[in-house]
Length: 161
Figure 1 (cartoon, rainbow, N blue to C red):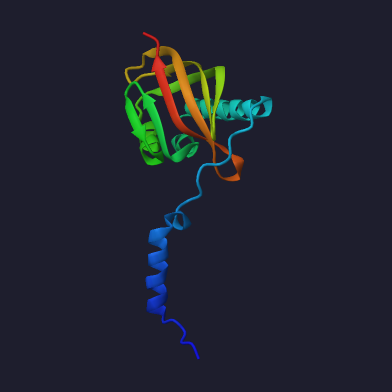
Figure 2 (cartoon, one colour):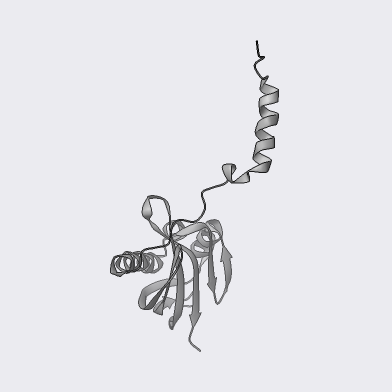
């Protein structure tokens, strides 16, 4: 009659197998390539307009929630890494956004990501009461999140000089 493995032996085997096949214990890899076409672009445009509205509201938690957990926001005042950093930076901003407009100029498809480029215009009141108007370009890299939501993996904003 064969002996049943002890719990300790089962753990040793489990860790040995895990070392040989780490993919069993890691998150699923990238999703399938995104379908090219108008439906994808409409969905991403909707997500961008939601993001733009949240920027105008300075809604720090919601803005951060539109990024992947390891999302990056590259902006003139410095690069932010991760949702916590994005949320904290928006919440701590002394400026108050009065309006924010983002317009798409181009979409490109890159496997499981869609890169959207465009222009933005923003009006904000700075702490001394002065209103400043800024415009520039943006590049957003979008990926699918849970429930097929679009998340920003990387946002780059550059002002015109």
